[in-house]
Each structure stands twice: as C-alpha cells, then as structure tokens.
Image (cartoon, rainbow, N blue to C red):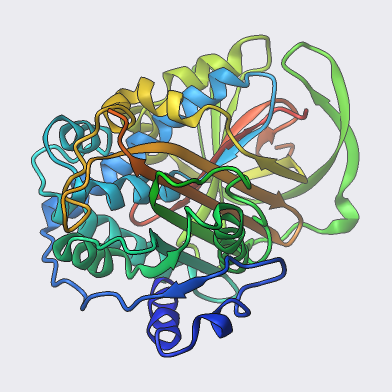
Amino acid sequence: MRRRALLSTLIAATLPAGLLAGCSSSGPAATPVTFVTAQKAADITVSSAAYQQAAMGSEAFGLALLRKLGDATDEGNVVFSPQTLVDLLAMILPGATGQTATQLSDALGDAGLTASSTAGALGKLDATTRADANQDSNTLDESSDVWTASGLKLAQNYLATLDGAFGTGVHQADFAGDPRGSAQAIDNLVSQETHGYIPQLFGPDSFGASTRLVLTDADYLDASWASKFDPNETINSGFYLTDGSVTQVPMMSQTGRFKYASGSGWQLLEMPYAGGKTAMDILLPAKGSGTLSALRDSLSATSLNSMLSSMTEQNVTLTVPKFTTSYSPEGLVQTLSTLGLDRLFTNADLTGITADHEPLDVNEVVETAYVAVAENGTVAAAAGGAAIATSARAATGTAFDADHPFLYLVRDVSTGQVLFAGQFTGR
C-alpha cells in the first residue's frame, strides 16, 4: 500500500547505508544507497468536482494510450497500467511550469485545476480504488517512490505535494558513481512492490551523471472472480486471429448471470471480482479483419461510459481464454509526445522540482506489465518509471464467445478508474 513505502523510508532513515543495501530483494543493490526522510504530508483539499474531473481525465488518458499502443502492435498482445502512468505524470506536474505544465494538465484532462489539486484528486482516487479492491480475497497494492541523485535537494512544496497525494517513499542513489547499481536497487524495490512479477523496469544503462531524479509507480493485483470457472470445463479450442487463421488456446467456460450489452459491431461483458467493486470488462468486436482496430480506434471515455451504462444483467453462456501476457511498450517517449506531451522531453519547464530550480528534462519513460487470467481470477502487476535528467537544452441466454481478438479493462466499478488495459490477439 502507498503508506508502506513512506513508513519504510522513515524506519530506514535511522539505519546505516550499508545495512540498507541488504534490505532489497535478490540481486545487487546500489553502493552506496541511502534513504532520506520525506517531508510531513501536505494537507490537500480536493473538491468533489476536482475528483470527478481527475477520474474522467485518467480514464480518457488510458483509452487514448490504449489506442496508440494497440495501433502500434495490431497483431500482438498488449497490457499496461493507465494508473501507473497517470500517477507518474501527476508526480511530475507539481514541479512543472509554463507550457510543460499546460501540456501535462491537458493530457491528464485536468485543465483548470492546480497541480496540487490534480495530484491530490488522483491520490484520493487511488485510495478509493484500493479500498474497493481490497475486500474478500482480493489484494491491490500500490506504491510510489522518488529516487534522488546524491546531493540533490527537492523543493519543499514539491516533495510535500507528492507525500500528501501519493505517500511517496524518498530514496537517494548514486546515479553518477554507480549507475548500474542504482538501476538494480530501483528494480529490486519495484520487484518487491509487484510481488516479483516485474523484476526489471530500467535497463542497466538507463542512468548516468546527468540523471537527477527517478520516479516510479507500481501496482499489484490478485483478485478472485465472484463466479469462478471450473477447471474441468477448460478445454483447448479454436481462437480466430486477426489474419483469419486459427490457433488453439485453453478456453474457460461457464453459464451464469452477467452484466451485458451489445451494439453495432460489438459486445460488452462484465466479469466481477469478489465483492463486486472491481471487474474485468471485455469489449468483443464482431469477427473479421480490421474489426479490433476499428473498435479500439473508436473507443473514447464518452463511448465507453455509454456502453457501460447500457449493460443489463442477463443469462450468458461465456467462453473466454485462459491467458498470460507480459508487455513493455517500446518508444513510450515518442508515444507520449504524440499525445501532446512533447515539451516534457525537450526544453521542459520543471524548475519547480528542485530547491535551486535546476533545468531538467524527462529523458526516459518505461512501463512493464503482466496479467494472468485463469479459472480462479486475475493476477496482474505493472510498474512505470520516469528518469529526469539535467536538461541539454448463450445457449441458455446471450452467447458471448471471446474466440477472437478483444480488448479488456480492469477497472474500479464505482470510480471508473482503469487499473489495467489491454488487447488479447492470441499471438
């Protein structure tokens, strides 16, 4: 949980650096790596209107990125966490000014809100989603962390906002003297926060003397279906690929009451997890070449919410693949630039991050996600990171047969926050 990272920071601040190096999971840790105490949590007041605007903006950003990533890998599987990337951008925003701040606010759908309100609203949205998911046998862990270069002093207001909104743990690493060890230390912590499902986020050569700050955000979900599938009913069956060919995949099946809707060229089904406040929604296009991309490219927050609001509970005979997907999008900086964030990476206005107003640019953004859908439920994990460097300048009812490529979302039913999004193509 978010406060876990902060509490570990407060405890670790009293220990020698040599002891701290041994606190990470398997693999070498940075030498030296020390932890510093975060500032007292900011008192961020968030209005109901700001909360709703942040929730809608987060949903819209996630769907826009799903369209971009899906278009880039039309024949392949995709999974990522909109939440981790939205939170990363919101962690940068309080230190941004000028055009950079405007682009960040626009991308997050939070134009008109202060940076503090945006961060606070998203932090409260995360807390609500976490509380909704963590019931019955479900587990949702979320962690946000800040890693600073040796000697770097963060601006007090910036650090207080991050602490108040996201409960960030604050760590110090020797990016210049031991860049590979620093990358390993960050990866070790991310691996712990994702229960070992994301063992590597940054590459060994991601950092150097110009690296001043690294931000990370991690999610881990283990949720049981409200209505589990019988493993004895899982059989290998044909799955129709986008090119018209057929492959064999394990297909789970059951008949029961599910929320369902359909329209011209699409079907939508909601599979709730235990407790009913978190669910996986499957958006199934009609069979045929180009139908997946057409549905994906037409998807927006407005159209999705219209589809979701049209669902009614029906008897459904459901078949859906049992699958596991791991994915790390390439060229995420370029993808985010096409979503209107180009200023973040070139001549950025991020002077509010450090106490001495150091000119900074974001030079790398990474994301890795994993999802496993099986008879008992779903295990999913994701982590995102941003490196900030010195600037250079049914038979018995409705039939829902997911035997061809589809989109899926794991979201909080009450807030609409999208935790994970992806497409399954069978490849």
